[in-house]
Image (cartoon, rainbow, N blue to C red; front, side, top):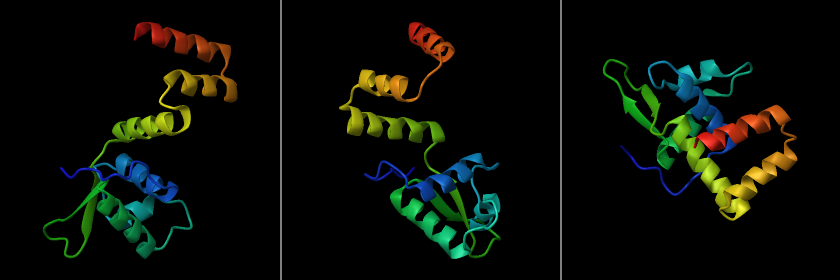
Length: 129
């Protein structure tokens, strides 16, 4: 398996494509499969192909030709959604909160107007772990 290069986060457009790949049955798809996931109007074929190429170069996606499919590449994620989520949140924690989980959680408690019910659930979750 290829390793993800130093790039830790995805752009918004790259994230959208990764979400489509993660949601596809069969663990990935072709450029046309990805295009079919977009709402109308679809982006250009070449734009989507370029983003998939970038994701491949960054090491987030693998591209392979399958027997009997000519020049068509099949793209599959090399990282799970959960693993990416962990990496992205680690980056946020380090970049914006000095590595402090307490500061990160405090920010969300103060800024997101978390309901009392949600706070109770979070406290229960922390007690279990």
